View 1 (tube, rainbow, N blue to C red):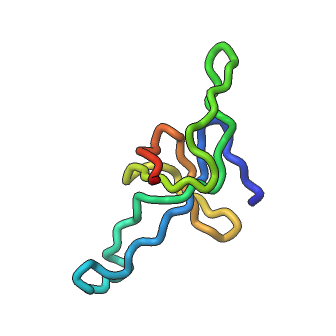
View 2 (cartoon, rainbow, N blue to C red):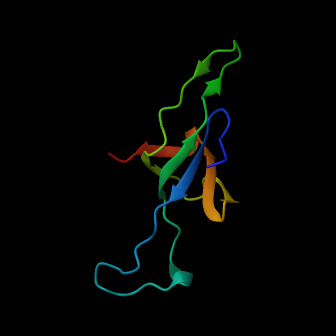
Length: 95
């Protein structure tokens, strides 16, 4: 990957949405909601405070996360659709 996020930003790959409901109904692409779960691809170094100290991020590459529905900015890097978001947009890490 030739991209490294800065400061408190993370690069996220969305997890693919389910093709079917629990009852077996196939959902067409136009009706699918974008998933709110993803995997951290890369993370910045941390947030810099006013006195110059860097607070490291709580997430790292490979973590599975949940984020808000409208979080992040969609970008295309190396032909892949990814999201760039601040660490504060992340709701939690899925264990």
